[in-house]
Length: 419
Image (cartoon, rainbow, N blue to C red; front, side, top):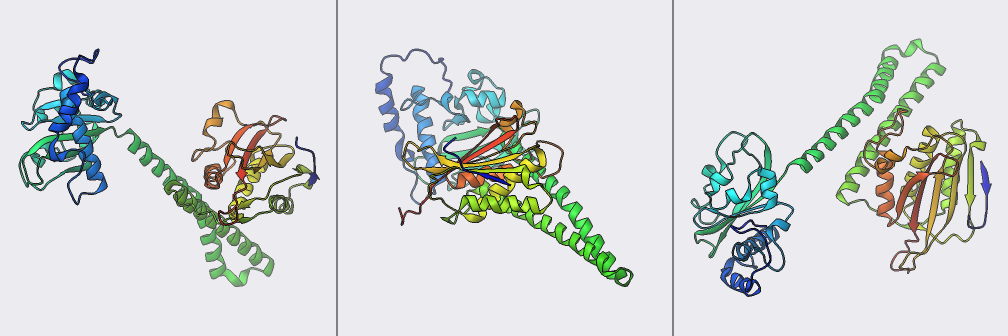
């Protein structure tokens, strides 16, 4: 290992949206006044979600008369919005609803709700007849989001809110929200890929552990001490691999849920890099393959030591396994942010073929693999999550000698009680 020190190197109404007619501004207050008790304030005792739904219903009510409320039009909403009046006929059918259902808004307006939006549940039952929004118990507030089917079998996520002037009064409006299922399907595919990857990665070491332990238990006397030791070392290595995989899964869960904890304390980043380089040289890598450059004037670094080891371990392993030539690790003071806080910048680069430009945007996503040389494809995703949990940033690019270059910056991170 070479160590160097250098100086710092719509609702759709019967009329299309056009120029606002005179009196539009005066119409909106009238619509608000007509909103009644089911207006901006949710009924007492309702939860936050119901309050939000009530607010949405109020805005939709105003929109039905003015095509806009407080500068917001139904066509501005990213989700589909359908509103039926007290007679059950559609008065609002925004652009997103038209896109999701493939029903033109001008054709939907004025139709009975079950004709404009002919939904069925997954068992083929007509949803409006099943839920009967204008009948049934007067205490119902709506329907939670669920998967329903449009004509042709296309799935859509639907939720409904029943708006009443009084808690047990008749339904004055039914407000329906529509969302496509693409985002949910992407999430489901991601989960399926994760399960498949985990199953694949666990199968090999578990097979090895099972095989060697079964062999030792049944044929212990047939092996000499050296053979027994070799098999036990293999079992130990595979058990460690399983442990690391489980740790990665736990980290992904915490990152995705925003529950990754950072226990800050002073960290000697140079010493941490030295330890990781030693691990690789002890494992058979030539010391000459690593060049470490520590710039002077490094600020103090408060971080989670275990998480820093995780970042460095993944980046160095990535450089050694997928890169070529000398692996260069540089540590330098980071430029001051707009808020004046300093930080530490660490760069890890190699001399291999690098990462294709078209792949750089996917490097920090789940299951990305730069080559077919093993790995779960989760390491860099976890690295990004850990760096960001520290308030830092990480980027990838092409190094000065053509290889991949990963650069992450960590703020000083001094605890508030010591700042």
